[in-house]
Length: 293
Image (cartoon, rainbow, N blue to C red):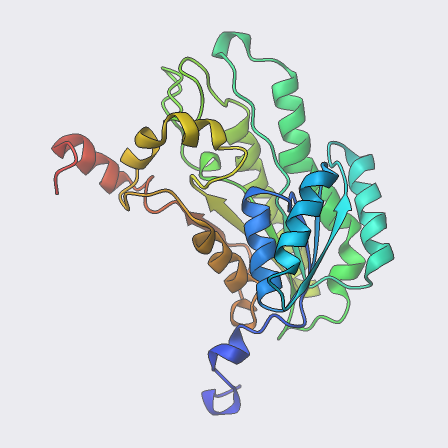
């Protein structure tokens, strides 16, 4: 058994990212961009992937100027297994190992309850669930290379608080994240599936020294939340006990922690990062007291 005296418990030892090689899908904007910047600013080698080369180029150029790590981009569309396989093949051309895979690619879809299109289900299940499975399977050889129980590789799947907490579906009120009378009816179920898939992956891959965890963000600035942030920011903030929505440092800090030596014994975790917005005590008190403490 290892004693404290036998280990270096300094921050510089527990949170050293210079040897990390990371892939962030959906890495050109939003949460993916936050994660990619955090890794680059802490010395990691980062690959970002998404559909639009113009966005990838802009983001990689910006964060490469920050250093000391580096960022390369790969154009990829994870709408189906073929797209996942193509991205996997390109990653394998560029590196023979990965220490962190962040499955962040995703989409949302809003529509009326009685006229919600089938594509709103098919697209979201493909991007928010199926791509996570095929990307992790395809990159398995890179993720297991050089790992040990003391320093495993990591898979971090990005779900959402929508996969845990429902909104008022009786009225279609999405709390400021979609137009009145519309709901994101396929988004929450797809993110709930992401959470469960993460637990299945964690069970399977832990013996192979691959730790799998899941992050469930609340409202953060991103393309997915742009509509609500621009049109209903007051509504969103009113639902936050912290008085604000999430910011890049909140998300980046959690990503770095889950990728660190300090989190090497953690797998199967589902981490809620919403500033307490969905805590039942807070919600009940706010309703009863009209916002008064």
